Amino acid sequence: MHARVVRSRIRAGKADEALEIYRASVLASATEQEGFKSATLLRDVRTGRLISITIWETEADRLANETSGYLGEQLARVGPTLTGETTTEHYEVSFHV
Image 1 (cartoon, one colour):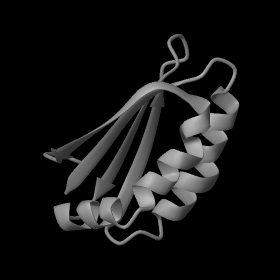
Image 2 (cartoon, rainbow, N blue to C red):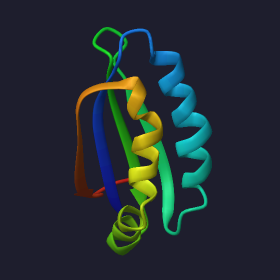
Image 3 (tube, rainbow, N blue to C red):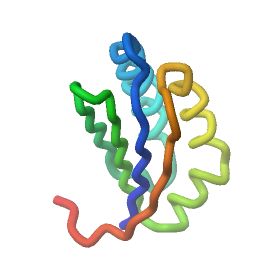
């Protein structure tokens, strides 16, 4: 399995909106993506930092999801609620329970 980790920070006063977009748009459409296994969103309430972790069956599934435009669409939806740089990292999953 493979993971995509997206890190960002929520704009002041936009936390509820950011979380709703993630729930209603990102999670809702992620389940329809080929090879999607799970998603986790971590939030540091004090700093506004967010970490989104999505797990994919294969690296090819993760890559196809990114090159299809899906990732860009989701980042564009949530983008107005974020501030600063958004980074994306990729990992091979060693353990997933």
